[in-house]
Each structure stands twice: as structure tokens, then as C-alpha cells.
Length: 163
Image 1 (cartoon, rainbow, N blue to C red):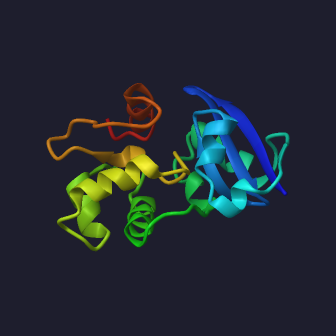
Image 2: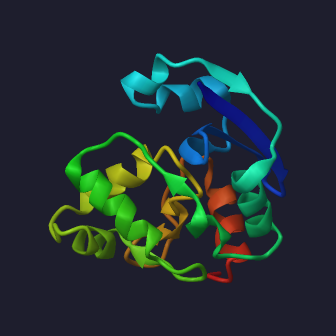
């Protein structure tokens, strides 16, 4: 059985779906939207509402309270192509307070020419902001898109000291 919980953050409720301490989906959205991002196997499992307690809630609260590296301790799993998995792994290595371009992300993911695929990996990230796709910006420094709105991306980057 999977569990879902949420916490209130300065930019709205952050909801997640987890299998024990393993986060399978997270974001500033609703349960139906997050459930669609799960693997087909996980979509078949029962999801039970739970209180936002335990390791995951503690780490997310710590992040919003200023411990900017707290999210790094959360284990995640999500479905995706080999390239997307490489891109998400590369995103997790970006230190808080730093940003890289989509081109840099493509390079770090092993396919320097795959800039569009890097953008697609950001868009398909089911575990935001734990996998920090908000730290990816356009080559000229413009923020670019964010699945939960550019204002949330801007807030996260300001919170981390990147802006």
C-alpha cells in the first residue's frame, strides 16, 4: 500500500506519494495528477491518506525552514527513459543555490546534443522539487518553464539563493 501526505509551504501545499520512505511522486498539485505520474504498476496499488509525519515530512519541512540540502536525503523512484533517468540523476547533483542550463543538463546526462530531451526530462519529472528541475534555466539565464508555474520556480531559486 502506498501513502500520500502533504505539507503547507510558503508557495502552496506540497503533496507526495510514497512507498514507505521512498517517494514515487511529489509536487504542488493534486492526488489525481500525481497518481498519473506513477508507474503503471504503482497506479494499481491502493493509496491511503496519512499524516505528514516521519522522515519525508521532516526533510521537506527542514528544506522550507532553510536547510537547503535536506531534500538530498529523500530517496525517490520514478518511471522514465534511460536518458530521463540520467538527467534526473544529474539534477540531484546540482547544489542548492546553483543553476545550470538545459544544454549543461544534456551534457551532464551523457548526450550533449539532447537539449530538447533535457527539457522534456524536466517537464516529466514526477518528483519535484525533490529532484530539482527548478534549477535548470535557459542558456541566456531566463528562468524557462516550470510545471507548477514560473512564480514557484522563482520562489524556490530565491529561497536557495540562486536569484
